Every structure is written in C-alpha cells, then in structure tokens.
Amino acid sequence: MGMNHQEAKALLADHLQDYRCRSYEDLVKLRDCPSVTELVGSSGTKYQVEVTVLWDDRPGGNLRVLGAIDDGGWRAFKPLCDDFILTPSGVFKGE
Image 1: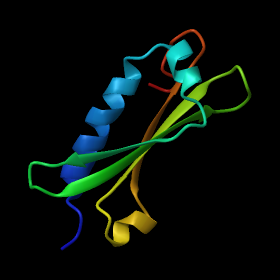
Image 2 (image 1 turned 90 degrees about the vertical axis):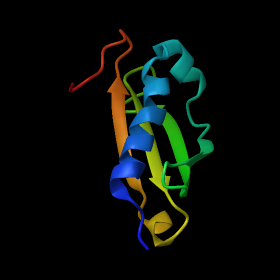
Image 3 (image 1 turned 90 degrees about the horizontal axis):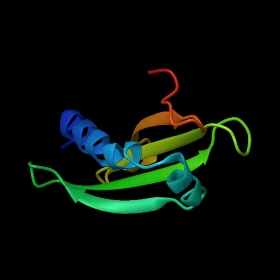
Image 4 (image 1 turned 180 degrees about the vertical axis):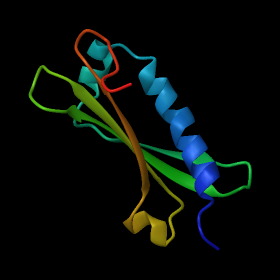
C-alpha cells in the first residue's frame, strides 16, 4: 500500500507551520542542523519528517526552510517535499 499523499501533505504543512511562526533569527540558529521527527497520521501510518534550514542564495540573505516527509517505504527514496523562503525582514518570499 502506498503512502497517503493527502495525509502526508497535510502533516507536512502542519509541521512546517511551526517553523513559519519562528523569527528569522531563530531560524538562522537552526541552519544546517536537520531536524527529524516521527509523526503518526489519522490512518495510523507513521511518517518521518525532516526539516532543513539553509541559506537560499547567500549567507546572511534569505532562508529556505525545506521539509520532506516519507512513510519509510519506497517513498523514502523520493519523499514528498514542501518549502518556504523567509527574507531577513521577516517577509515570506513568493507568497
């Protein structure tokens, strides 16, 4: 049985919301230190979520927060991803 894309996408969006609420300065501190979390969907499926914060274009510039989710199956080789970019002034770029 394959990963439930709707469930995984919703879990990832919800998890990334926590990062969207953080300040630019707080996110800079998390740069290059991936965070891995295990979440359980309403279906009972266990998912692994990895969030990485990195410079988008240059050090001191925009930050890209990249989240990836998989269920440990074949999807681990090509996880479902979502991201956002935060500028130093606290604006979400491209939204």
